[in-house]
Amino acid sequence: MYTQALNSSDGDDRGVEDVARASQFQARIDADERIEPNDWMPAAYRKTLTRQISQHAHSEIVGMLPEGNWITRAPSLRRKAALLAKVQDECGHGLYLYAAAETLGTSREELVDGMLSGKAKYSSIFNYPTLTWADIGTIGWLVDGAAIMNQIPLCRCSYGPYARAMIRVCKEESFHQRQGFEIMVTLCRGTAEQKAMAQNALDRWWWPVLMMFGPPDQVSQHSDTSTKWKIKRFSNDELRQKFIDATVPQAEFLGLTIPDPGMKQNENGNWVHSPIDWDEFKQVLAGNGPCNRDRLAARRKAHEEGAWVREAAMAYAEKRKSRQLAQAAE
Amino acid sequence: MATANIEVSETPLVLYALRRADDALILGHRLSEWCGHAPAMEEDMALANMGLDLLGQARELYSYAAKVEGRGNDEDKFAYLRDVRQYRNLLLVEQPNGDFARTMVRQFFYAAFADLYWRAMMASSDPTFAAIAAKSEKESAYHVRHSSEWIVRLGDGTEESHRRAQNAIDDLWAYTGEMFAVDDGERSLIEAGIAIDPAALKPRWLKTITGIVNEATLALPKSDWMQQGGRSGSHSEHLGHLLSELQSLQRTFPGATW
Image 1 (cartoon, rainbow over the protein chains, first blue to last red):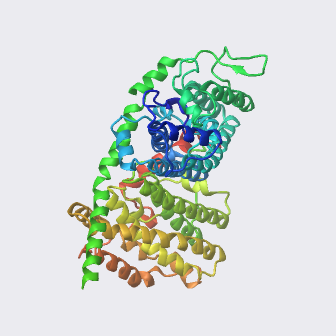
Image 2: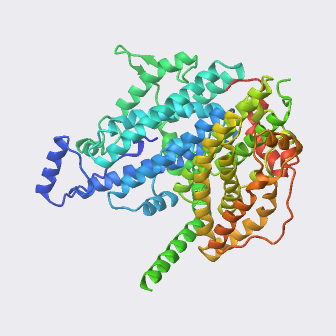
Image 3: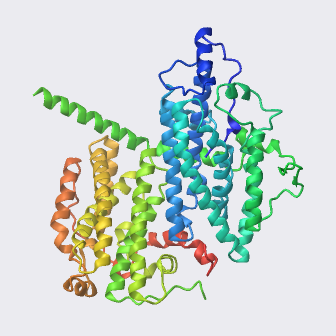
């Protein structure tokens, strides 16, 4: 799950190597052709995509943590199995996306190191805590819902491996979204305490979820290049609007109140939200969200504590190889 | 009060199903604790996979126990509303994950047994058990392959991985004897052709274990002292903590539907 909040291409390094090749490349994009790993591409296109796909992969991997927090406490065996399978899916998405990013020439190890060192970003939504079981429902319903809004257009992204990865990822995400909504339905039809738990989760997640779509169009820069390259097909505000319009009736169905008393429907039928606190977004991106430190610490701990296991696997593979060589030489 | 522990009529057949279900649930739960924290993403996938297999086995076995018992219990009541003394799993499966070597040794000892066990149980005169066994055998065959490959890599990998794997074997060995023990109730099921005698599997289990341990340049402990108690509810201190986490929502919000 990921949205375009972090995506921006470098306006500066568009120093295109070869004008003729560049115009050919753009012609292919304009003709809706897919760019494949061995095709020529501008360095900035490669760089933008490497960053976007790897941020997406990091988001999947870090995104395992807030939901993983509830696997051992899931309230029924059916919910436990579904949640474990869901978090496993996210890991699969991460692996799949790292593989897509590797086709652009950077190894998974380098990309992961960038995340562990805090240099590379992941979706800011995962820096919020999961306090109750209702958070698991809300993440499925809203966070996966927002991710789908963003990822469906990415299925038509100009870069082939990314587009194909998105097709598979979207199928699983929409299943997760339905699962999350179903948890919310159960809570809202449950006891007063359960319903209050659901409302509280919506209150905490609503605004951070809206921030997932990124800064408003008038202040977000560089998106023109991504649009020209058909990496990005809708603006942040367009996607955010689509998401809100889809979500309002769902909240009504659940009998929950969206925590925005000033939200009004305009003459086109769109729900217009109140101003978003972009300072909060900036703070979370800067590392000051409620869980930034915990998330990175958990990933680093897994990485460091797993080092001896990975080393053992390498050492064993080496030994085996040299034994086979020795045998063959006999 | 809805928070109270359920009462279970532990007829030999119900008890038999609960013991196997508890093994699968508790080991599956332990594996699920790794999710998001494994040494490599591939292992996150594999451990979750095996956890899901075991969880699936537990659910089928609990449901069958509920049906046989016929007192209105169900899979969730068995899992969430029994306390530590009512749990009937092997001591082996409740042992904490520890490092990756310990998790793999625990998995290997159990899976190498479960694979033989379920394969033999496919011949059970009880068609439900035979069907559960057929599915579980396929799954445990993968669990054996996965864990035995890791035992070899760790044992024959680096000095550190060798030391960790050997420590895990030394510490967990005493929990393996319980897998082959049978009480009078279970004996009656074996005589009726419903269950199989696990003691008969021991030579083959030992052969698998010895083969892999030797290949891994590791050694089995000399001690043959074996801990017992899980099957009758005398557990290690670890299980209570696992259950307090597993059962927390059901205990906090009694009677709610999730």
